[in-house]
Length: 452
Image 1: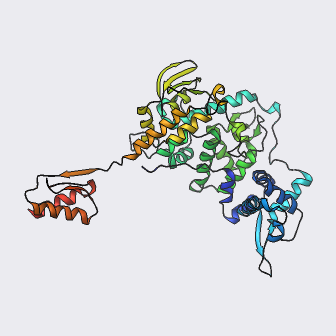
Image 2: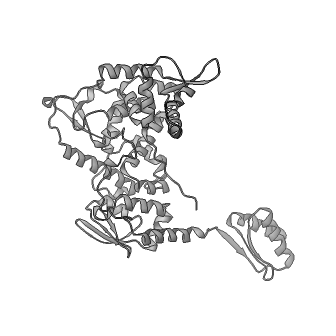
Image 3: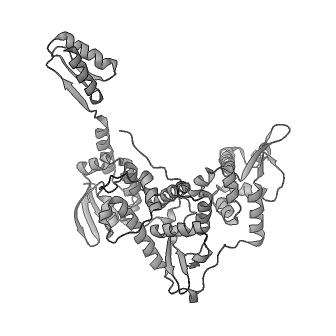
């Protein structure tokens, strides 16, 4: 059975995939330049700073001399990344030797930024203009509630306790890969990618949604470059500070409403004007997927007898664990269940793999067991993979059995007919029985009628 896998790419992968003209347009903002610089590998950052005030191309051969022989592989990775992001542009001199020069826009903006500093296109509002500024703890709670509400909406819209107001643009972004297209009276259902999405880390989930949202921007009449620029600028805003909505463009106003649905910002009406307040989800947009600082404390304990204890009061955690485990009973702050063959087969049926389940359990292991190696008992992980292999060992093919042929000649003619179409699965010459693929059933019936 082929597996569908979601590749969670970070922001800079999306930036690197933009056409050259749109990428150069992004570098009009000094904050985009700084975000790109932050995302680079350490050696690439060093090259940028060394070349920042150099106005002539540097040959590739001379740059290789900047590193020791054992650092050539890292040098190639750094140069490739700089070329992908068009921070460096490759040129050829008269001797036809490759050289690298810095992108003029990037170089100019970074020079100004280092010399005079940068300022956001909008300033934080004063306390007098805001009715009430929420605390950082309240913002974290709000962001968590919105994000969990969104994930519950994906699992089953009827399980969301309070009605949600996701915009049509957001729903289209979900529909692209996470939800199946629905009929008139049926709610959309999770696809295999949707089930896998629920087991990903929050940062990886965020990147996936933002990527889909940006890639569908042109369908909504928006420029993806403008969206990327705004989202990266948003990551430089101060956590918990209020910013006036009047400073936003029309594209940014529409984006803010969608981001508020996901909990990246909180939108509230002030005394005179509306304002938006960035949460940690927004300020972490320029953080890489490998950053472990944003991981939440784990809550799951798995025992060697396949018993599961989840110390959580979150309804979302309960629904996610139901995807691959049997929940036996639930207390106010404790879920008790077990990982069984039947529960795992349900997960495999939905496209979830054993490795994804193991990864989820390891990432969300309770602090008491997270320090152990391994955090999930080996006999449990090995058995989960064995059950998956047992299931994948058998390939199910819809087929039809034909028997009771009146003559040997008719039986052999039917076998030849099925063989010519490549649909003959099995034949028994002595008892005159054969099995063909289900897709040939109608043609086989027509063939038998013609033989009569």
